[in-house]
Image 1 (tube, rainbow, N blue to C red):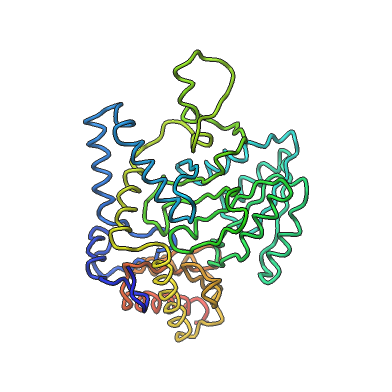
Image 2 (image 1 turned 120 degrees about the horizontal axis):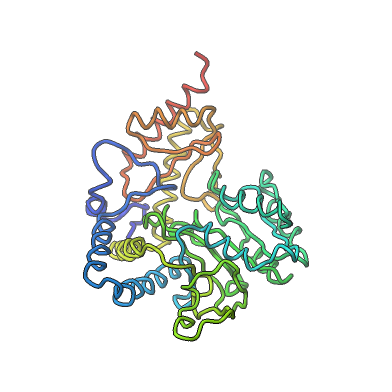
Length: 398
């Protein structure tokens, strides 16, 4: 758990749990992208192999499915939903969102309302589907003060799906009034879908009165430290949507009967499930979620730690004379778990920092700095000041 000042209570013991990642003098300011994995994740991957060797096909019923149930409950709890809600797993949010979009035949002219600041895979997929008849209303996000009002105005009768991120991936802007947006979508008969990837396990969200009707997708690659291949979709168990993109895991009961052309869907999370998958990420997720619980680090505690750390990053950038280059919100409630800094040649900055043992990343002209709970204040300071030095090399004429 965290103390009142926003530190992990026993930081030394916590850091010791990351012996494979937190090594040497390198500084991993990649908390917004690829957080370090605790050592229990490696143990879990070995366990997945050993279970396959021991149980062969029986591994699914003996180990994988029970772990999936446990992971589902843990994910839902950390998302802020009831542990018994319906949840489907996929290797990426793209897989799950595309499956949801497949419920709306293009011939019917479905309409999607979304922003121009959604992640690349969704932006690309919607743009491609628009070529074949999907009607997409893109809401610009540059004017943040009016963003939600303009978004709400675009949600009109005839809208099929409303898609918005809880936290924008470019600069960590926490979108306000998510509950109001969801309620408006439901009121016009649209499906409300929230991309919570940059919020999961670090930014609590107030879901509002339409909470039970929400579709929420996220993954464990970032702030949850679950690694790749473990994404999920929370959805209303009572939905009657019928994904056209559907695999045999979506209805196990059909295997026991005579094969027909009638397509049914199983209970719980089965409706949005695919087909056979690599269960190793489920093992990792089960172990890492228990790791968080072991250290008493729930989402509110992680939020306190993250907010303190991003404040520290901002302070170091200000001291380095880069206050005007900071793109992320200054107000804690509107800032997610990383800090974005405008920098010409952001990609070059990242490359030079890697050579110095400082790990950050870039998106367009933004360098993104992502602290994580296992970092010391000295590492945050040292890494942030190195970022500032390299950015000044780009903006200062030689």
